[in-house]
Amino acid sequence: MIEDIATWLDMPLSNWVECALTLALGAFLQRATGFGLVVIGAPQLLMIEPFLVPVVLVLFVFTLS
Image (cartoon, rainbow, N blue to C red):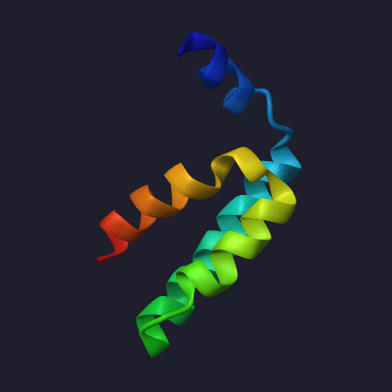
């Protein structure tokens, strides 16, 4: 568990910013059209940091809904 958290914190700042911008764009499209977070967010997050995809998207969708 501690090793997983250390791995997340070891990401460069540019990856954190890219993930945040991807989720913001996906959330905007989700709110405007009804879909978009998974259509935009999942492929982009897979390209940036693959280990974030299932957990981050599920938690983000719960808070967005």
